[in-house]
Image (tube, rainbow, N blue to C red; front, side):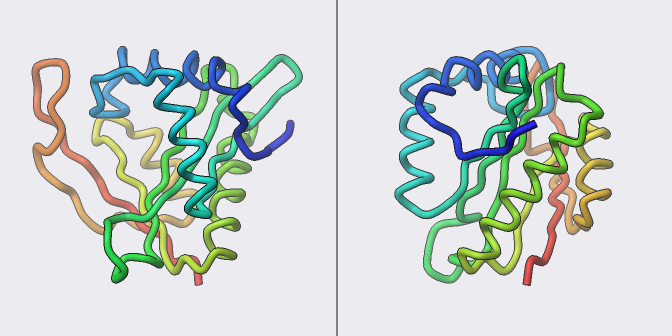
Amino acid sequence: MTIRPAQPADIPAILAIWNPIIRDTAVTFNTVEKTAADLQHMIADKAATGHGFFVAELQDGLAGFASYGQFRAGPGYAHTMEHTIVMGPNAQGLGLGRALMTAIEDHARHAGAHSIFAGVSAENPDGRAFHAAMDYTEVATLRSVGYKFGRWMDLHLMQKILT
């Protein structure tokens, strides 16, 4: 297993992991699949802003990714981050999620972040359990904020203090 910064060459593998989750699950409320151009911009933007975008690689290819960025715009939020973590079906139970989270948390901490948030769909109990195991605390439930598959869904905000 290798955790490393994402590179443009990883884009097809990231799309192959991310788009089925966007298309077929309520793990994300996003309904628009990512394009290669979207990811090219995202990887470049994370690098330009000093935020991390990491991938987990197994011998047989990419197994997941995680990135983070500023929680909300403006200087008052400069030390508060929000992350995304997406794992492929071949990554379950291997410790890759924990390794990716450790990488982005360490990166964010060293870049001066004080805390980091996760927005977890109420329809993703495994995601909530994973974040709780990573010492994230549920701080809010936003009722009926996501709409997908013809229904409204709740979002749980979970936070970890990094410093």
